[in-house]
Image 1 (cartoon, rainbow, N blue to C red):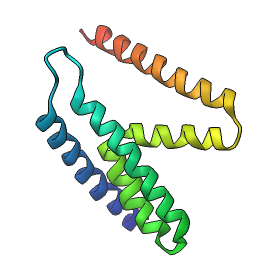
Image 2 (cartoon, rainbow, N blue to C red):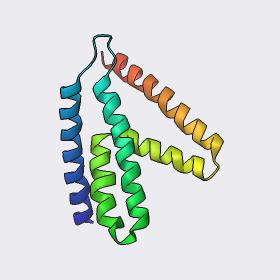
Image 3 (cartoon, helix red, strand yellow):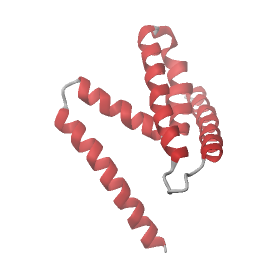
Image 4 (cartoon, rainbow, N blue to C red):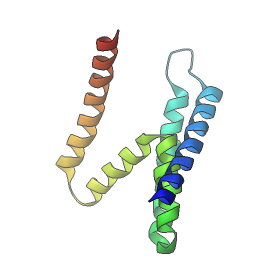
Length: 122
């Protein structure tokens, strides 16, 4: 368990550093669109898809590879990648309504919760 926590923690830290560097490098366009976050989210989704594909082909890599790279690095880089992977799993298993509720509910409740937290703390 300690080894697993260490792998996830180190991966998360590295992913968070990369997220910060990419967001700082790319920044926000003059129109206010958060390009850095957008690119990190899309890149994280591509990366978790690649890693998921690799671990599904090579079962021997699963545990350490998954803990350090998928849960740790991708989780620290962007939780949007995990959110998207879970949505795809629901689509692959024909849980269309559940996927719709998950995606729409997560986005709407996420935005509302940020607003609630912000205004409550202000």
